[in-house]
Image (cartoon, rainbow over all chains, first blue to last red; front, side, top):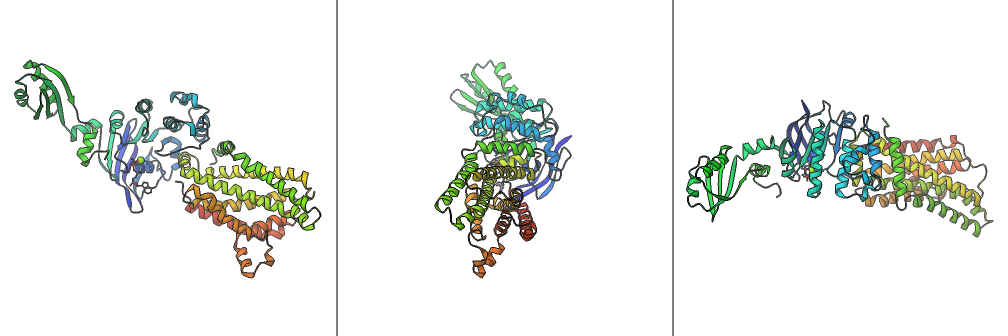
Length: 304
Length: 248
Ligand SMILES: Nc1ncnc2c1ncn2[C@@H]1O[C@H](COP(=O)(O)OP(=O)(O)OP(=O)(O)O)[C@@H](O)[C@H]1O
Ligand SMILES: [Mg+2]
C-alpha cells in the first residue's frame, strides 16, 4: 500500500518554479529517498507532503489524508524533521521532549527511553543552544519519533555531521524501519542514499528524472563494470582482449583496467585468470554507483 | 483544540525567566524607575497641586501604558526571532494550532504585565498613598482591554517586519508617537484642530481616555465609545495579521 502518494505536483515561488510535475509513491515499511543537488526542490516537495506548504497544482495523500485539509490529523500521525529548524535557545532537552509528548494523542512513554537510545541521556538538562550540531540533530530525530509515527520525514538529516555521527544516525534510521515504520528522506549525499534507501527518486530542477532501487538505477543506467589488476604476465593483455563482454583494456605498466558490462563480465575475467594461471598481485572491481548514475542522467556531478 | 497551551505557556514563561535580562528588565527595572520618579517628584514639589495630581492620576496611567507597550514590543521581537530561527515553523509541524502558539505568548506577556503592575502598586502604596478609592479591578479590566488592542497592533507589526533586528525599533517608532498624541501629555482640547483630528484616528487616544477615566473613578458607561473603538482596532488588526502573518 502506498503510504505517500504524490501526483503531478507543481509549486512556484513568484517566478521560480521550485517543483513541477512531480509524481511518486512511498510504500509502507520502506526507506524512500529523494536525492538531488542543492535547490533541486527536495525540501519544497517534502514540505508539501507534510502539509507545511500548499502546492499550486497536483494531488498528495499521506496515510489516506489530504495534507492540507486534514493537517492536524496528519501531524498527529507523522514525525517531521525539518532541514532548517531551531528550538528556543534556552529550552532544556527534557522540556522539549516533554512539550512534544504533550502535543500528541499517543506519545511513546515519557521520552526518556528515546533520549537514551539517541545518546542524549546525559544532556537532559542542557539548554538547546549549548548542544552540538549532531546533538541538536539527534534531538530533532527524538522529537520526530515521540508520537510513534507511521511515517517519518527526514530532510537532510546528516548534513554537517562528522562521519561517525553520520553512521550512528544511519543505524538509527534503519532501526526506525526495523520497527515497521516508513521513512521518507532527502539527501544530496549519494553514499547515504545508496547505503540507506530501499528506493530513491532523483530530482533535478524540480523534476523527477527517474526512480527505482539504487541497484536498479545502476543496472539500468550504468551497466559498465571495471576490473583493475596488476600482473607481470606478458600474455595477459592479449588474453583479456579476447574475453567476451569486454569493451576496452587499458594498460599502465603492469596495471590493467578492463572495462566491460553485465554480471558475467567479472566472472569471465576471474575464469580467464584461473585458466591461464595468470598471477596477479592486486585485483579489485570498480562498480558504478549512484554518483555515476547521476552523472549519466544529468551530465554533471551532484557536487557541482 | 487548545492542546499544549498550558505546557507551552508554562515553558515560555520559564524560558523568558532564563533570558539574561528577562525578569530584571521587565519586572524589576520598571518598578524601581516608577518608585524613583514618584519619590523624586514627591520630594521636589510636595505641596504643589499639579505634582499631587500627576502622582495620583498621571503616573499610574503612564506607567501602565508603558509597561503594556513594552510587553507588546517584547512580544513582537520574540515572534520575529522565533520566525527567523525557524522555531515557529518547527512548532507548526506538530498538531499545535497556530492560534495556540500565539496565545501562549500573549498569556506569558499578560502574566508579566500583571506581575509588574501589581508589584508597582504594592510598592507605590507605601511611598505615595494613592487614594483608597482607586478602582483597582475596574482599572485592571480597562488595562486588559487596552493591552489586547495594543497586542493586536503588535501582531500586525510582527507579521510584516522583515527581520528580528528591526522588530523592536519599528514597533517603538509606531507606538511612541501615538502615545505622544494620545492626550496623555497634552490634553486634546488645547491641541490645534488638525492635530486633534489626527489624534482621534489613533488607537492610543482611546486607550488613554479609557485608562484615565476609569482610574479617576469614571463610570463604564462614559467610556462605551472608547471600548468600541478598541474593539474595532482588535478586530481589524487581528483579521489583518491573520491574512499577512508569515511563519517563516
Ligand atoms: N520560501 C521560498 N521562497 C522563494 N523561493 C524558494 C523558497 N523555498 C525554496 N525556494 C526556491 O525553490 C527552489 C527549490 O528549493 P528547495 O529548498 O526545495 O531545494 P532543495 O532541493 O531542498 O535544496 P537543498 O539541497 O539546498 O536543501 C530553489 O530554487 C529555491 O531557491
Ligand atoms: Mg532542502
